[in-house]
Image (cartoon, rainbow, N blue to C red; front, top):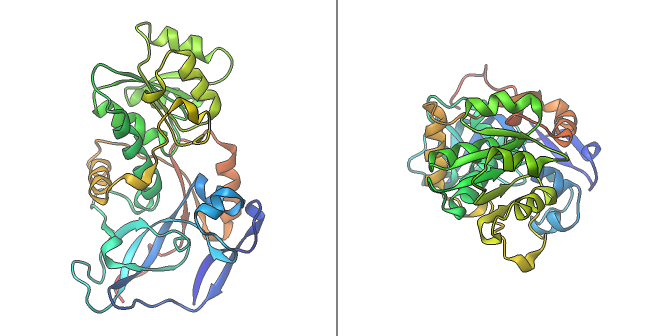
Amino acid sequence: MSRYVRVTRFGGPEVLEVVDDTEPHAGSGQVRVRVHFAGVNPVDRKIFAGGETAARWNAVPPYINGNDYAGVVDQVGAEVDGVRLGDAVFGGARHLAQADYVVVDADTVLHKPGGLSMQQAGALDIAGRAAIASVRTLRLSTDDTVFVSAAAGGVGVLAVQLARLAGATVIGAAGLHNHDFLRSLGVIPVLYGEGMVERIRDAAPAGVTAALDYHGVESIDAALELGVRPERINTTAAKTYRPELGMHTVGGQVATPAELERLAGWIADGSVVLPIEAVYPLERVREAYQHLAQGHLRGKLVLDLGAESEPTGS
């Protein structure tokens, strides 16, 4: 049998159910992955809430929740090269990931570097791709001072580090409890809320040249008030806001597997940090999404599928 998280109808976390079904099996060109950890992402919540996001991702209940996963290959189908039984892999599989077993095309899995934890790998696909693509879009350099909202969150924490690697000065908005952490990454922290624009001006007397928004409309308005040109703003949190301005709305879909592998390697060797805020057993998936909705995270949340103590192989 195989457990998975089923979305029974659209709504809040209460629509998520953990159910049992027969195990899937790998077909030709496919591998089966025994999932160890699966990611918890804001887009998952937007999809199971219904509406435009659900329609965009072709979500029709009942379906399996989630996208990010990491685990060990335990079945290999015919005509598969480059992936073997026992390989530790990770990736993204929309409407498949939060399950004991995921069957995917073999050419979609990425091999997990040794220094990357299984928890981090299970949280990486969406956040990593979004951070890579959004930072790349602004073509940051040593001449830039970039404002990043939700700077300690799942995407933001990676984006601030990629921006720093590009040479930019980074100002990150976050709650007070994350300020020391951001400083440890070389980021200048500022507090959200009333007076944030003034605090950013104080932190960047020479001005702000770019903005990465992972929070929403208030952060975009702040960037505009600071004089950031619309073509140097990228938002993944408010993509339909003021389209006439021509701001970028680039998300993770345009990041390449090679770029994600490179980021995984940086996390593995310590060049980039990806904190895991909390780990929930699969049976507490509703609590995980309630935690996510509260915001102010440091890094990512993941679901534990209880496989780490199991032997690898088939």
